[in-house]
Amino acid sequence: MADGSRLPLSGLVVVSVEQAIAAPLASRHLADWGARVIKIERPGVGDFCRDYDHVMNGMSSQFVWTNRSKESLAIDIKSAEGRKVLDALLAQADVFVQNLAPGAAERLGLDATALVARFPRLIACDVSGYGPGGPYSNKKAYDLLVQCEGSVLAVNGTEAEPAKVGLSIVDIATGMYILNGVLMALYHRERTGTGLAFQVSLFDSITEWMSYPAYYAHGSGRPLPRTGAKHATIAPYGPFRVGDGRTVFFGIQNDREWRSFCAVVLGDAEFADDPRFSTNPLRMQHREALEAHIEARFAALTSAEALALLDRASIANAEMNSVERFLSHEQLRARSRITSVDSPGGPLMSFLPPLTIPGMSPRMGPVPALGEHNAAILAELQRPEDAQ
Image 1: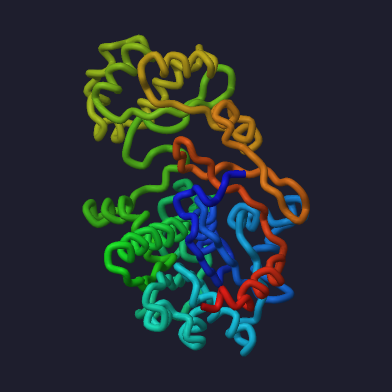
Image 2 (image 1 turned 30 degrees about the vertical axis):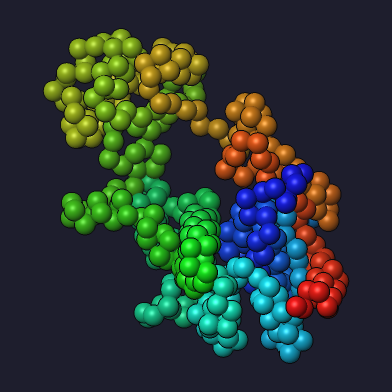
């Protein structure tokens, strides 16, 4: 494990009253690069994400993903003693993140604005479903439900049936904006000496990610169609069957690639000027005929042969992997992107964080048991030198 004292965020103390995915994911990214993250959990039950499943040596796959390298402190923040502990932590903290139920933070005086007024150097973030103000401000929100409200399902799936994104895409987007806000606020404090209060909502986060289909619908007067695995506005771009029964994916982005594709992959340079297909709008208009023509050519090829031709033509391409095949992907293995972390149930598989810093290794600490660090943290708060 990396020496945390040499990492970019070493010395940073983060206190997070967090559950589910968005806030824990953001704080885990901070922990990866050296921050001390103290995760406040409810005594006895903890973060409800702990019980989503038990497939990782008895632990939840989603909890393992979002909570390595943290300290778990199980206290009742509504009790006088629990609040006393939390206030002592906040007096020493650099960052506070909370995603309590709507209205709960304000009732407890733990909303970002109130806390920064009490602790002027604190960076505090409120995470909510729909943001303050508006008719949805007190509405509970989870990933799939915000996918629905944010029209993600309207653009995902097939023409016959909408589908949710298989990942917690709203939570992930929100976690990244929480992280972004914390890092910006740290820079703000470095320049001004003062902390910052800010809010991030699931709905606002996915609104940003939905900009392209929303702009398309606004500008064209019609919704972006659901096209399954095919691109909605570019052709050819998507899945194509080949002679060995497998499917390859590729995408054409510009006229140069289109001409290279015709000459090298189709073996027919003149096809690029066919009046039905010479521009992307025309290719979209005659998409079925184009795809039939391509698959007729691919019928004589294996997937390996088709991919080799696409590579030779400098056309971006891919195979459709199962998760099992992805786990053994040669790129992951060649770059040693899979490692392990400890946990109460023993070692667990883990991916390295996506940021790579030459000469530095991220911290890949254990996933904590509920309340594992209570004794150590409470003892630390009682030491006279820590109260000064």
